[in-house]
Length: 400
Image (tube, rainbow, N blue to C red):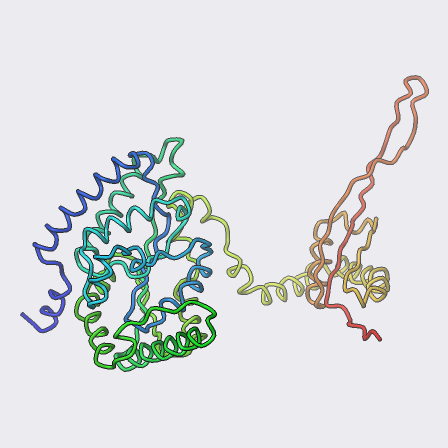
């Protein structure tokens, strides 16, 4: 057995962990069904699993991550869910709360209506048992999706998207940030004592002692790191370098979370939309295609092309010049040259080449031609009027 194989096995859950997870999940799932009802198990469409060492910036980046995904709900901070005195005592000792308690609290929170479109979980999963419970939950959600896919309730049971996002910092950075945060809390609390304004913040041993801060980082590496790494092969995995300044980390997050329709849409929805071109595909070679069309007009439609350019120069340009400040001109024409659809295409392309944006609206107006004296019926002919809107960057005026 090679060293690499040994390393891979360290990240695999053992049989006891899987068995524990199965027992925990079965108990929690049954309690959810009993409490909410099977048809009310509406879990989020999207789950962002945010993990990272102490001081990695999870709290700092949370709102930016939510905004990047278009979510307006508050984050689910797992440590805040565990607010019982017993759980608080365990946390203060630098240990982890029991998996069953964590799993049940998290799953119940996810069923709140405010998380229907998506939720960010800060600090879950932290153990391999929690990872296994999460996998079983996602399997259940997929079963609900299949079961209700052709029913009026289908919109409540969408196929889930799971993002596992890990903010990475070294031990040195983690310890420095923990102690810096502790220093800020101490200063804040002293100011509250002096002024009587505000509320004191809780300070932990790990915020002020380098040994405790170091131990907290190592607990994360020993107990949580493998669990987070095991998500790599299951869900969309984002490993973010969080060592740099906030803006640099935000850029890394934006790059990782950019929209990908093939991953996020339901497969049937994606298949429905896939024949339509994506905007950047159209614009990618737009300049080359424009040049090709204009040269083609000159080669293959020289007479009509010359006429369209002449109309633009003689009739349109004087009006555009009078709107140089606003950068917006509206022009109507009844010129018969535009009865040929190619002439309208030429007009748009010419304006595009010259740096303008032109849109054309063709309107048909009824023009009375004669009246039938016996019946009183009015006979009309159709007259085409082309309304062209031309926009460009106008000139700024200095106003005194």
